[in-house]
Structure formats: structure tokens, C-alpha cells
Length: 151
Length: 310
Picture 1 (tube, rainbow over the protein chains, first blue to last red):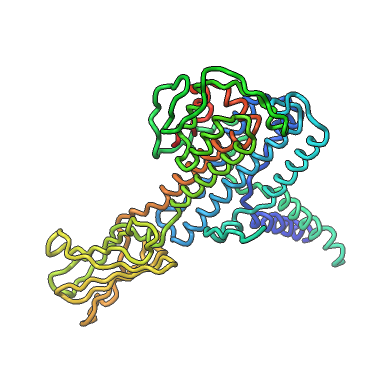
Picture 2: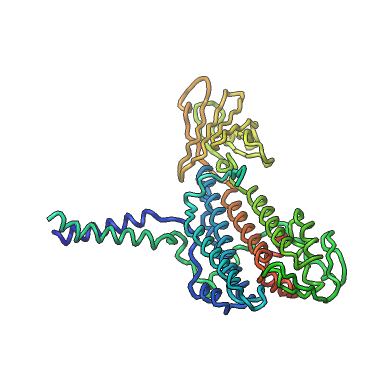
């Protein structure tokens, strides 16, 4: 009896976790981030990665497209979700670029200033935190942008 | 006993639940997502149709690209500025390289021109990136769903108690002009009398996408009421016969043929954003900028097809 109860609760726990799916941009593969951090990826390789990243993001954002008979309100939300997703992908691209700049590369002439290296890494961490913390299922609540009056 | 149950069952389940939640932050993207750059599913779905500029002849020397002067004067070297690490690029100015600028949105050509004349200017480079993204997102936003669009198509209702009219078709059209969400056209056809258009009524919609249309016929007043939430197989639109109120007083109309443009526009918008982001990223990144700027146009365009977008 206890065993069955434990199994049931385990299944409930797993299922409940699945119900909290969030739409966030997946992290970059570790082999890429490590290569960027170590400065072992040349500019051409970075460009290829960047293009592939945006291409895959686009494919995913397109997959959010509403069905032919979806309602206007649902369609609007899905459009906002796609917009959010693409924006987060761009942010991640920028973050990866900061990571690349934190090591000797073409941009810094093969030398990486220690202070700037730290700054770039902090910026990378900050941007990636923003990306992983943004749930586009929530952020798409409104597709009407409201420009901040001050910041 | 209860504590033991809690320890043996609920606690592990809860822990696993939290563990799954933490690990599932990225779970909702499609399972076919590949770990770039090894993925093989980058099949170019981000390419787009649109206002693609024709590839013109490769300019040499000082020339004009899309009405824009640039400072490509053969091969030369620009001294690097030491203002920042990003400015340490020393791009070799190839007269052919700025051809990619020909495909930038018109609103950014002024900044693009300035950058072409001063390619090591970091501020201009970042300004151009910002302007590209602004232009692109503004462009993509025009493809957002509009109220009434899910209603577009042929709606069919059947009525048998109004004499000669046995079928009434309603075509809901949303006007193409932007900023006018209020009205559209609803076309009414009498299939029994003849196949030609019987009349055109106004389709009014509120900001939630709900709408209604009416047309007064010689056989009575017909009111077609729409909502924006048609479900598969059935429609909530109704055809109401005014006046007599016979068996056709409330006849459900079904969406017979949808011409809802939203799914296609969604794909188009995301494709445009992807193309624009790839383009903008070149100017955001000092590394990529330095790399692409030194490529010949053919190589640059093969790597950055988005350059062909505009």
C-alpha cells in the first residue's frame, strides 16, 4: 500500500512539474560557451554559430504560429510569444559575443585586458540571467509595446 | 507514521518535482531542437520573401549603392582607434565589401553611409545596429494579427423558410488599410437565386475581434453575427432572419473556407526578425564586424543571406 502510494505521489509530482512548462530560450551548448570563453573559436566560427542560433530560434518562433482557426486573441498572444522569443535569442547572441570578447580575440587585438575581461564576463552573466529568467509565455501578455517614459 | 509517509513519499516527489521544474526551464521548445552547430535541421526556414533588392553589379572605387555614397576607394587600411577594444579592429576596406549596405532598410542609410566613411567608429557601428533593429521590429510588428482576420473566409448558413433564398453566404473581409479596425465588408450571396453577389453589408468589429454584419435583402433583414473564436467543425457565427422569426431565426453559419492570413503573417514576421537580427548582430559584435567587413561580397552573402533581405 505504501509502495503504491509512493509511486502515485511520485507520478503526481512529476506530472505537476510538467504542467509548469515555460517558454524560455535554451542555453547555448557547453562546448560553444567553453570555446568562446577560452578564445579558441575564431570569428568565422562564431559567425556560423550565430547564424545557426538565430536560424533555429526562427524555426522555433515560427512553430508558435496560430492555427488557421485560432481566435484573434490567441493569435495575438502567440505573436507576442514569438516576438519575445526572438528578442531573447538576440539577447543571447549578444551575450555570447560578450563572452567571446572576454578572451583574446580579433576585436581586442589578441590581448584581453583583465578589467575588461571581467566586465565582459559579468555582462555575459547578466544577459544570460535575463534570457533564462524570461518566460515568453508570460511576457507575451501584451503585444502592444509601452515605451518607458524614463529609465 | 504520517511523518514517515511524508519522508518516504511526498518529500521525494516534491524534490523531484522541484528538480524537474528547475531543469525544465527550457523544456517547451520543440524536441527536434538541435545543439548547434552540429544540428542538421537548420534548413533555412528563416529565409524570407519580401522586398528583396536585386543584386546589382559589384561597385568598384567610389560609387553609389542604392543612392548612398560610400567611401570605398580601392583597398586601403584604416588605422585603429584605441578608444575601446572594439575599435581596435583594423578592417581592410575593400571597395566591394560595403555592397551589403545596399540591402539595409532605407531608414538607416544615413548612418550606414557615415559608418562606411568611418568604419572604425564604434559609436556609429552601434548606432547602425540599433537603427536596423528598430526598423526591423517596426516592420515585423505590422504583421501582427488584426481584429477580424480570423473571420476572413466564406461563411455558410442554410435557411429554408425564406422563400427563394435557400443559402446565404457571408464573406467577411478585413480592410487592408492599417489603423482602421472598425469596419470591413460582409458579402451576402444567394445561392438559390443566383450565384452572383446579392449585396454587401458592413462588418463592424470591436477591439476584441468580435464583429457583426448585416445586409437588408428584399426578403427581409438578415443579420450575421460573428465572433473571433470559431472552433473546429462548428462556428459561432449565426444568421438571423429578422421579422418573421421562422425556423431560420437562428441558424448557425459555418466557416466554409478560411482565408485567415494570420498563420502566414506570423511565419513571415518571425522570418523577418531572424533575418534582421542576423544582420544587426554583425554590427553589434566588433568581432563579427571585423570579420565580415573583410570578406568579399559573395562570401559575406553566403554567410549572411539576410543581407539580401532588403
